[in-house]
Length: 82
Image: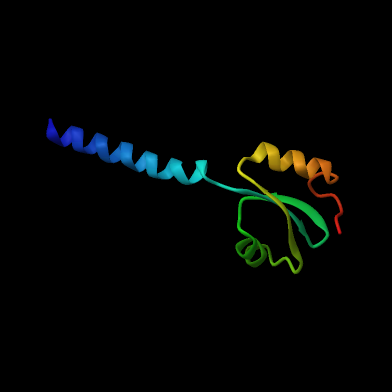
């Protein structure tokens, strides 16, 4: 009985540990190499992983909906930016 409770507790803890970082993600609206982008990666990681040469933060949001709305106001994801 104790083994089942321990296994359940460990599964629950593992699930919570995986869920918490997702809830705390920031969403960045970038002008990256002349295109508007919404991404969760911090600027340095985004630049390194995408090999983008010119990355500028337009804004940072705590949720995806607000970031995408801001991107739409700037012309939309994938549109040209300066």
